[in-house]
Image (tube, rainbow, N blue to C red):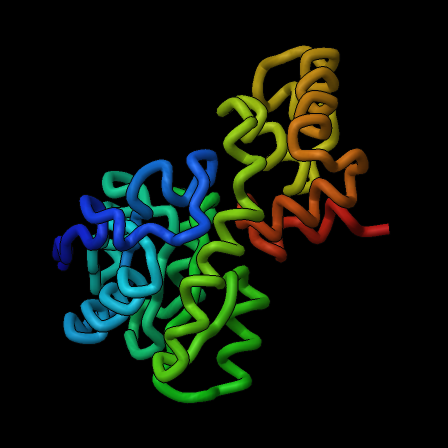
Amino acid sequence: MLVLVGILGAADPHWLPRNAHPDRGMIARPLRVLFLDDNPADAEMVAQSLAGSGMSLVTERVDSPEAFTQALREFAPDVVLSGDALEKFDACAALEVMHDVRPTAALIVLAGAVDRYSAATFVRAGAEDFVLKSNLHRLAPMIECALSVRRPLEKLTPRQMEVLRLMAAGLTTPEIARHLNLSTKTIETHRGEIMKRVGIHDLVGLVRYAVRVGLVSPQRSESAVAP
C-alpha cells in the first residue's frame, strides 16, 4: 500500500533553519522522505517532528515490498525511514532492494524500543543509523549528516556513478571496461575524475565511501578490499 502523507514546511520560511544557506543541498528543494511503516500515526508524528525542527519536506508512506519498490523508483526519496515492526519486510530486506533500485538514499531505522542485536544487524546491513521514536530530536541532525556525506555524489555523472559502484563491488578495470563495453583507458579516466570529484584518492578509500553511502552493500564490497 502506498499512501501520500503530504508536504510540510515547504512554503513557510519559518520551517527553514536559521543558519540556512542557499547552497545547502537539503534546502535547495523539499526533502523527500519515504516512510516504510504500517502505522500512519507514527509516520505523521515523525513528519511533524522533522518539520518542527526546520526541515521542508514532502513525504510518502508505504507498507509492502511492492509499494516500497515502486516508491523508490517513482517518488525517488532522499531518505527512507523504516519502522522496525513490519513482519515480512524489515529494514534489512528494504536495504537489499535499495542497493539495486536507489542506492544513494539513506535508510534510518525508527524503533519503539532498544534492541542492541537488531540495531547492530541493521547497521551492518547498511542502515545509516538507528533511533528510538522517543528520541526524535536526534533524527533531523542524523538526516543532515546522511545528506552531507552523500553530497559529493551530486558531482558525479551517471556513468561515473556506475563505474564507482562496480569498483566498489570488486571488479577490476578490465572487467569494468568489458561490463560497460568501454576501453580500459576510458575507465581509468573515469576513475581519476571520480577521485578528484569526491576528494578520495585511493581505491580502499573509494570502496569504503561507496559502502558508506549505500552504493553497494558491505557484503558485495568484501572482495574489493580483501588483501
